[in-house]
Image 1: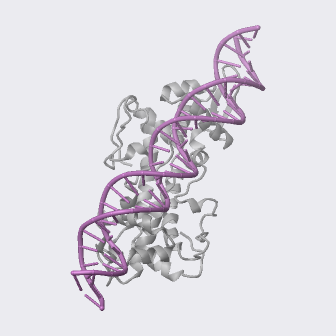
Image 2: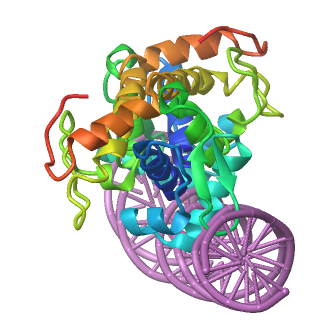
Image 3: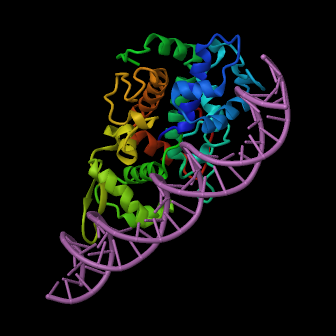
Length: 154
Length: 154
DNA sequence: GTTCATTCCGACTCGGCTGCTAGGTTTTCT
DNA sequence: AGAAAACCTAGCAGCCGAGTCGGAATGAAC
């Protein structure tokens, strides 16, 4: 169970945006250099974020990206969802309305449901963790620990 | 973020074992047929479980597998860990002692740590969900909903 | 003690997906 | 006009997950 690099990059990108005051847009190139990420790939990442309405762009010279909302109002589940496409521990979870356990495994109706209970709980745990974290928190955390790795309990 | 099929298969396998009383071993072939899973692949799956000490095997004819402990005493984090190798939301999390946020990203010490806070929380959520679920629960849940898909809140 | 059912082991294939690149087009500032 | 940026689309290459296969070791039954 591992999130894609896209998720990591996207979060880093968002944190970077959040670290700027948002008055003027930040060019992707600047972010790529700051985070040492491949610019060409970041384009795809930011495209997802834009499509989800999390960032806004201004084109042309001196253009770039800004957060669409203040960082305090951005919960990380939105961000990860935008990047990852879905927050599901199992393939068959995609597009199933949450809060319900219904077996989409055809052919052995009801059988595989026992595992479903487990994945539901896992999914719940993940989503709760993501929802309970705002971008602002990460920005602030990052700012405080710049240049000095630290140990902190989760 | 998705668990491997191996995890799914392994959990199914464990549930199946838990559904038998454990007096006599269950052959892998029987499980494969009951769950409609490829036998040859299940061999690899069960090997992981055995290596982790979650099941015991008896070889030869009439052999098979049994749970190493009663299902009530098997928490699902052990199972998933055995199958998945690690329960980490990010590559760089592997083999980092938990409860500490320390940046293993070389080259930009301290920078990427902000994302780490997020992944720590996610990991915590997952592990808690897994630890809080016993195999016995899944077995019981599966038995109750056999043949009748149902809707249940997580 | 042969036979058969089973676990066990390792090597091998195959397809898909992720991460990344590359080139070109549009927009807008100077 | 020219530069700097967002935007778009196509494509590729390597990796890994899922599955197969063949062949051992092992032990029960007859």
